[in-house]
Length: 382
Image 1 (cartoon, helix red, strand yellow):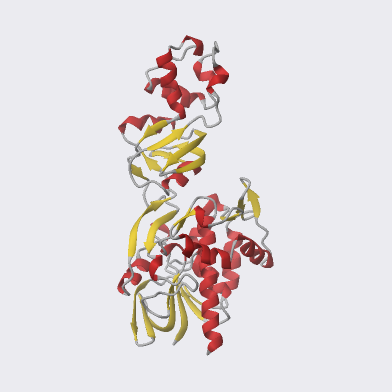
Image 2 (cartoon, rainbow, N blue to C red):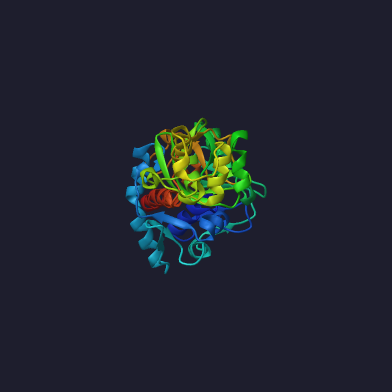
């Protein structure tokens, strides 16, 4: 009989295993190593958390989100990491990263979680319950447990072992699953924007407006369409329909009024981008002061370029999964299912998704903390 079984060796599962008392849990991971997704995150540096924190940086129920963030916020996380001899560094003004590589935080989790029973290369197939006992069936054996924590993540990065097992388990216990979709992912484009592909490798600063939100950062033109920080952030709020991109977010058109310089030399974006847009707008690259009023209006559309993406790059390129297990059926203080005592859900598997910038890792760690405090409380009552 196992006390607690943790399904998943990603960010939330590893934090939970690290926080629980020695020999109190068995962690089951389908991969041959722990923290596979953490290792590739943030360009290999892992964007751990953000100095700006709150439910407003997430999609999901704000009161549910706030409960976990307040118990274990970014400051508490950074202090915990300091105790493990990892001092995160700030980049991009508010984002905290590992000093050198993602391996640093994964090594901490591996060391801390070794006090638990770790089972690698083992896939959970289903979970059932008889009386107060959970039965966790894997491709190797069936475990009995008092508590089960689903920390299996979403559908993003299937090459790293992502699967729908967490949603399947929740569904089998009567939970509602909010429709899932790739998030923090690039956009594919329709025929009118195929010229974006010819700019592959070029990047520039933009501001994207979508779903009432504004996303500021870089856009990277790619073979499939567009990517980059601003696009990934915007994808969280895009379902379908149009988005608006300002390719000149800090540019003052009045500053070039009457200029005799060529258009391609005046705008604060790479020349390749300017020239590509001139072709699309049927404009000649000529001195700005020679443009007609109609031509100026055409050119100024670069400040509010509107188009509808064809779709996204899909789960294989998505950093996270939007949607998941409805938080209306989960206790916001303990992460326990309201459908079955002893069943818990933490991290990305829940219907909570953060913006780009360390928010999803913070969510994983915060929910793991809430769950750990509850499981330790249960142990203390016995």
